[in-house]
Image: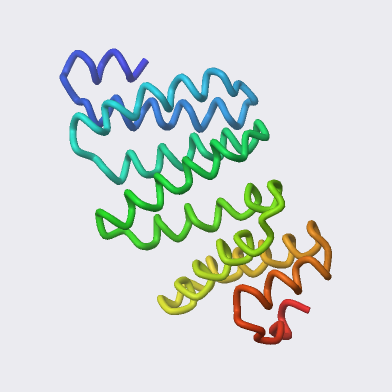
Length: 172
């Protein structure tokens, strides 16, 4: 009901935010085609009004949707667009979230080093800014990745990404 009201009063940001929220709701309710449609309707509105953060977040949502549908190449493209746009506008937190979100798609495509790197960079950023919650989430993602791809593959990828640094105690 909000969309026609926002259209009537000319509130383009309200329209875009409502479409993005509807997309999120549709994902939670497993209506993936409806979610994609809502996200794709929100993107050009965000672009028209110059809300680049809204665009970055919507690109990430579309990437999450692609990953859920096992289209990992599309997911990685979406995460890269989200991260690049977030960096352009000076939102390193949003960029870090997009990068971390890409890790499972890298792993699904067999790019284990890229998966580790996709989590390690945001982990270091979150630690540097003191976001303990984001650090905890990212540490759990690293542990899950290690379990998913296997200890040997993870340890090899870790060594490649870190230049041979030993695994930290919290990861073993």
